[in-house]
Length: 250
Image (tube, rainbow, N blue to C red):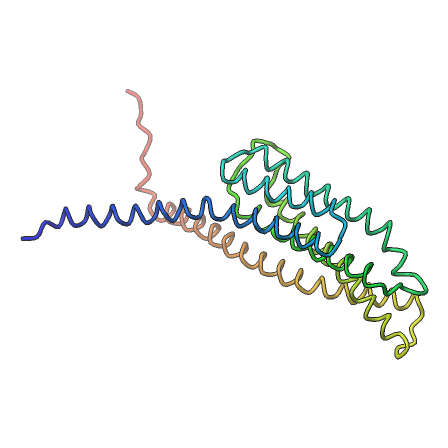
């Protein structure tokens, strides 16, 4: 008769080894991928001669969060979040100071040495925010801070992603409309308003899809919890004899 207990122990040890290898593989490979992505984005920004200050802060935010997730360093989450917010503020200041007036200008300068870095900077920062949001969402760390709510910060980073996407699309759409201006005969103000409308529409479509999916996923969980609670109360009402009666003291 074969020794089934020995066979089950061997199978259990093999499955345990596979799970340990998989967990260690995910523990160290995933942060390495995020760090490599940050470095590649910095190289990409440098190749296209974009402003490097904002990408540096964004890449540092991703790297710090990846390291903090691996070694369970809670305060690293706070530092990485601060770096992402600094990146967003620097980019907004740089964008308003250098490109906002060009969108409403009479003649937008079509110099590839100026326009290509602007477009690539918007693309790099949009990818950085999306990558950070994905990494932040996968982290399971909890901080004992009343002001640190993970869901609220995920919403902020998602909105920040759509804002960066809007800024990147605004320049692209403005350039296309400016090229087609001899055919459309739009004034400068009308061209700028049309650019804002198209960029806003292109940004809101994925935003609406994302938020509708997220609310659709959360609603069945709430309904299931409410149904389970009602089912527990109804079973107690149907079986009152199952509840123990209080004993009277002699």
